[in-house]
Length: 152
Image (tube, rainbow, N blue to C red; front, top):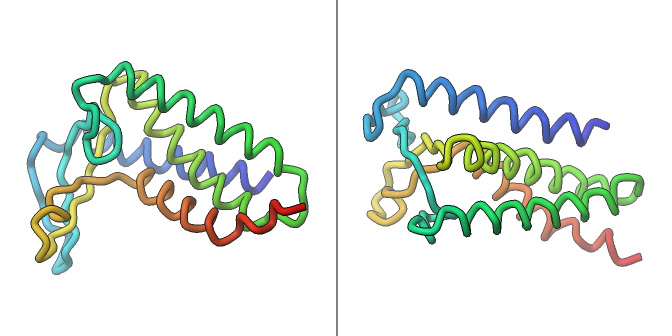
């Protein structure tokens, strides 16, 4: 049950931040967070990761639904296994983040991104993320680390 709570927490927190950014920020408005390399900027992404397929939002939404269904299926297969705690955490992070972004796609027809990093690398500095993206990324890394628990 705690893993489901993790997914719900990621979803809820990211949705709260997205709603705040969507209501309080103008698109493209960029604000530096303290004396860090973190910037807050509202960006609407109609495509997949890195704005891929942005001219085909229905295809992206369909693929997103398929991937979330598959990920949910994997989670259901491991939910009662005691030896898969790390994998369940990883899947929970990806499910919470994935469903938050899917919610945006279905209800807003775009995903609200809001975190940009100021870096010496121009291409990296152009990317805009949200909390769900970070949860998905962390979950993917943890999946690679803990996937060995599925060997039985």
